[in-house]
Length: 157
Image: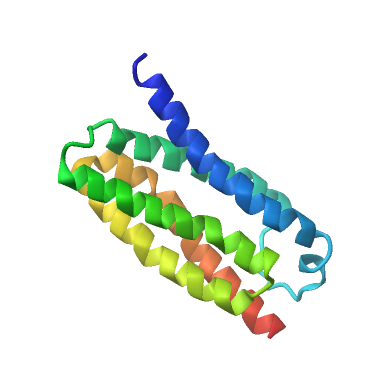
């Protein structure tokens, strides 16, 4: 039971990143975004509302597994720092794409997120293979999101 506050905090922090991103998204969804040319492989809007909370919960569990190893080890502190970096990058994408409506800048930003996430996964792997594996669906989704962002930019430039 000692771990309950840590796991709850870990998941809440990750989910909060999504909530903050959705604030930038909601005003544009039925206006600007609705009028964009869309690639054939764009998922329906509701899919994002299903996928992201699951990914954020998995991210929260993942970072909890690392954090629960303690923070006295340099390796753990570095891994947590990398996680924080990629989470900030994750949180910036929606305000750039939907809030500022800057698809090219959002593409650059998400391309920076991908290696930050990959390095985080590698750092997590050294500490907890389970924690690293929990981030793999997120890496797959970010890879898909890069292709999607690139296609949106290309079709609407």
